[in-house]
Length: 420
Ligand code: UD1
Image: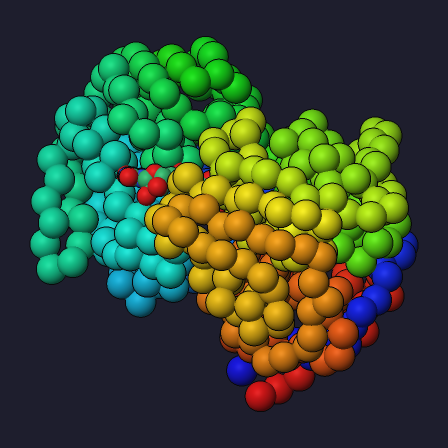
């Protein structure tokens, strides 16, 4: 197992390129199941979650090549519609094959993902919506067994809660269903929007893209012809590097980025005293004279993303005053708190709210990554801490950050990837 050894404090300086968005690539790769022709996807991030999904596709009978961030994938001869436990347990987002497999083949089995480090994370809303579209769903031996021998039919679906992968699953299912599907209270994340755009480009009639109500006219199981696709930049990776610049009082430019997807994040960085300039596909963060405390609550897009909560908690350790961070989406997404405390952070946790006092001179220590974004918060804190911090269990980081330690090295961080 690898770990990262980081010597701080440092001041990051320079330019890096932001990779394609993992959370956009996952549903779009899943959507290729709606097509029976080869298709090509550019700007695919080469991260562990994408490799896990491709391993699943291999088991389904798909043929593909991922080279230089371009994925060519051919799902003409899908021979199997079972997503097995060994893969789903390593990546919950495997559930994204449920909607497209069922819509195209009328039957599939997907292992139930179960809970995870950040909370219970049920998939009841995915299943309820598919039932409304005529699927019959049973839970057998830990698997969701879904059947719709005559195909899915359009329905009016009101999501009780906003769910990102739930919306994506049902959007894909609706694309091949018979008739009109209306989705109310659908997620509006840029990754959901790109999925809709890809389907619309392929000829599916979709109204309301970018809003919280969608109307989709399905093709009645006629396979789609997907046009070449380029994955949007990863807004969470970009936000993480903006925080890395801010916490080290450095000046960093990000290239290949969509600043309009980062409004809630940049607003908080402004509140903390940083200045951000955006031009075309570039953004530069200029440091605060002194970081100031801030308050934030996580919520659905366009609000502040839960996937940036941990990184802002690291930042708050260096901000002057009392910062308040409220997590509203996941009940247990505070695993990084105790690790940040090992570095000396002053954090008081009560229910869904963390209160931080800053600034604190953090001191290097051994810490353990617990989930993807929590891990990046530990890396940010290590950049500001004095001395050596070893971040263990970085397989969590590898799930979603492409070449993180090389990118940070380019920016001047003293960071090594070592074997335990
Ligand atoms: C996606 C993202 C993840 C991000 C999250 C919230 C991907 C691959 N992952 O996860 O990075 O942190 O959105 O922005 O895109 N819920 C239910 N029932 C359901 C589905 C969800 O109760 O059937 C609840 C969840 O427990 C959670 C909330 O709804 O409290 C939002 O979860 P959801 O948007 O579904 O998260 P994911 O799609 O799993």
